[in-house]
Amino acid sequence: MENKLPKVLSISLSTWRKDSGIHTQTDLFKYYDPDRVAQIYTKSDLPNTPVCNSFFRISENEVIKSVYKRKAVGCRVYNGADADDATKKAIEEEKTLYAKAHKKKSWFMTLAREAVWWLGKWKTKELDKFIEEEAPDVYFVPIYPVAYMGRLQLHILKKYPRPYVCYLADDNYTYRSCGANPLAYIHRFLLRRVVKKLATNCTEMFTITKTEADETDECFGTKSIVLTKGIDFEGREYSDKPVSTPVKMVYTGNLLIGRAASLVEISKAMANINRDGEKVTLDIYSATTPNEKTLSYLNSNGCHFRGRVPKSEVDGIQESADIVIFVESLEKKHRMDARLSFSTKLTDYFKNGKCIFAIGDKEIAPIIYLKENDCAVIANEYAEIEHCLRLLIDNPEKISEYSKKSYDCGFKNHNSKDIERIFVETFVKAATSSNK
Image (tube, rainbow, N blue to C red; front, side, top):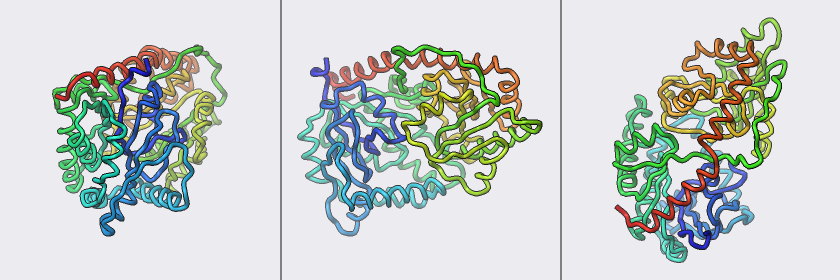
């Protein structure tokens, strides 16, 4: 079967690393033959993954320099190679830059970034040579919330036409997440132009949620296939574990786009619940460093901020919990940021059969999904948090009930055998068809 698989070229934002916290794509391509997969990406990092063996890097740092040096950028890089001093420096500079950007979003800088890519010298003979040597049968084209990635993808699709499969995992088209900032609307206008071209002409379309599939099909006339992270249930059975005293809650993930505010509200609710003795604790594991005021809440009332933890330890941390936390923002500024997303964290929770306590607006896709499958206790407003937590903490049988519901949802809807079949069959089908 593997020798008959079409050759896939992925045009991605980040490279694939097994130690990365971003693993949606690598979780999908683990079902494929790595010798039949190549990747073009736009970060400074070097690849280290078992799912692909051929890579071309167009480093954003080099693109910036190419604007004033007018030197062509982009080169083939090798899987598992050690970074030299220059690459290590570029990686650290890039991480620092992105950390600052995440802390305080600047739409002016976002538009400046688009201008840099517009002027940069990344359309090179080396890029052409890589594509010609790899000779893909089909492209994998994730759609990102930045216009320059769409222009890079469209450039390749136009110069080397092949069938292509898109993947939409967020709301990267509507204006609903723009707020009141006029620069955000300008950027979204630019983004919409490339997204429309990609989506309306793709051979196949993956989306991460049913809600997003419905909207995408209505906007672009596609027939979307819903695809999320798969769970390997081979040799795995649900285990009903006794609830701890005090009840142990865990959060693992970033604190960006308003999630920290939701955790602060949990801390406030815990202050009331634990007033007469510690009934519940919350351990927070995150690489995001909160400000001092937020940190004071995340280190009080039974909460403990534990900081960064290696990816290899996350599974064990989640398994040790009685309740796992899923939060999106209820702040006006960020309330719709995750409107069409679906965190891979949820599939990890399903896999481990954990009771999920979720916070989020009733109109966003992950909350809709959890409610439809009755596999989480959900607070749609801050005022509901304490009531929901008391429902679980005062009734341990509810924790066991929702733990089983969580596991059953994963088994029914996220079995890796089904995900593998859909993923591979879609590329085979796309490669044997012609573009619209």
